[in-house]
Length: 158
Image 1: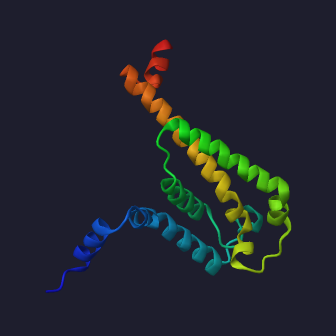
Image 2 (image 1 turned 135 degrees about the horizontal axis):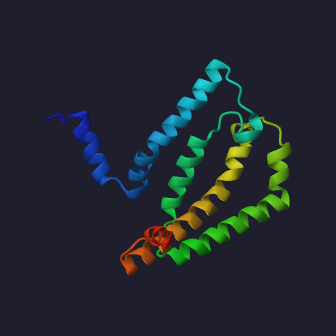
């Protein structure tokens, strides 16, 4: 007996590991990135190459950073903050030790070098994502401990 396409997709989603499920969740962002790249290329719409590269766009950045951040999910907000600072430090060291020169001056001969601005920014965005995750967790923890939102408390002062 054959199962329907939806049943097959549901079975695969349930039996797949977290990486496959995560990829499925990020697929809309990556699909938007592909659609935007195809639209820009096919219409000749002007896109500055020094912004993200020839094919890269922010949908790819969001999808890749979101995917990477779930692969490195720290146990606590403190670890996310420390990891975020470490990732940003490594990214800055890479930029200062030649990475920035590669991003600014490398010829666009491969798919990677054609999109060097977007690819080169991924680690920095991942570090910022982790810091944001840590800050959000700290705010959420503080709110749940007090039983009220910090924003409600600020609004009441006015």
